[in-house]
Image (tube, rainbow, N blue to C red; front, side, top):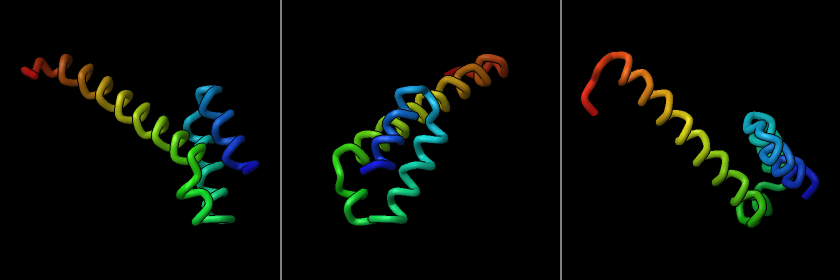
Length: 70
């Protein structure tokens, strides 16, 4: 649970990379527990959605710079 809690704390702090590293550590220690744990799943879901949004934003800006219709 420690690594999942630390991952969530890093996510709240805005550091998705460190949050993901903590989840990976937790998964190495107890894979079944982590893969099915609500905190781990919620934290990972938040990371994935944030990364998707950041990627979409970067792509939108680049598309604007290239004057692509979108």
